Length: 220
Image 1 (tube, rainbow, N blue to C red):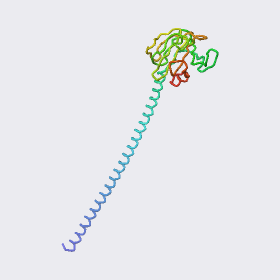
Image 2 (cartoon, helix red, strand yellow; image 1 turned 45 degrees about the horizontal axis):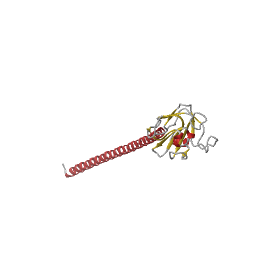
Image 3 (cartoon, rainbow, N blue to C red; image 1 turned 45 degrees about the vertical axis):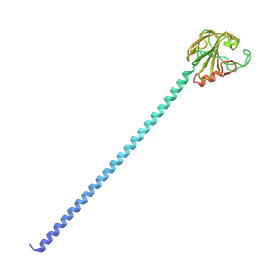
Image 4 (cartoon, helix red, strand yellow; image 1 turned 90 degrees about the vertical axis):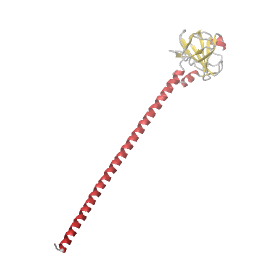
């Protein structure tokens, strides 16, 4: 073989080798690019899925918190209402607090609950009996037989015109506990319970009992 032929063959081989290398490089670049694109798509999808999941968790937590708060409010309201009760059941409200009239030397000091004689009288709130007996338990004959209970929140409740007293001074009573029977003793035009909320155990310190009970969650 002549030197010229050999030279052409070497050149051809070199060109083919270079073309193969370029083709291989181009294929590798395309493959690498595709891989990078696929990886980017996977990362983006993963990021989106993570964001959606995080948002869903945040919404679920917010819903749980809102539900828990509503439950707490309801429980607090129920507890508040249960801590105070009406002093009698199935009543009709009659003479109101601060009402003027010829039945009293001053304006009416409590709220009257019209009920038949012998109706169960209940402690409107738990506490300790500090007054109990005739002559208004020391507040005067107009009240007839009466009871005064001291409560832990610094208030007192009074129950008057009773036909019978079933507790003693110093006795601790619970909310809703039976303490007496209603009647018409003292200065009374008919059977009813005279009920007061006081800031001291004595006459002259009464506040509106209906407003007070309603503030405690009791439907009077």
